[in-house]
Length: 202
Image (cartoon, rainbow, N blue to C red; front, side):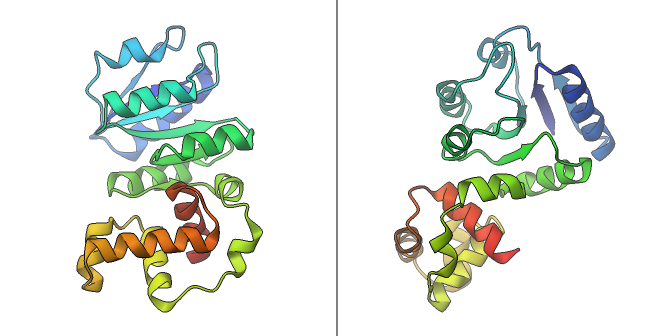
């Protein structure tokens, strides 16, 4: 697994690099130059995971992340940021990024997040979950048994196709259930549903 890090805080990027190297000897880690903009540097990379702090000397905007997602669809993104702006955090999570942690997270939480992402899932720390699933009424909404099954699978990062196979349903039916759950809970994006699922099952 090749991991690239973009973070203007030296101690932060060095700390993440140390955690990754202790996590797996097979991981190749490279720290990008935070004194330069990120987009031109990605052209020379062939990485599996980008660990990103979007605040810094050259901020990585919401539009920049959208561009990265479009240009490098196989590149997974884990944000580790000190941002506390609810609106900005929600906007980035809505892009479908694979993980979002705060700078207060532990090395164990970083390793856990990478494990989940490598297996095809998504992981958000408790603080981020509270921000993007802050609709209190959602916790009191009654869901059907089937909807609860799907919620549990969502929390584990199970893809819709795999859900369909496990529940012996069509992919169309699974997608219909997901849309109905979103509507019931009053959520506007799949990211909010994922955060709710993780919080409900944990």
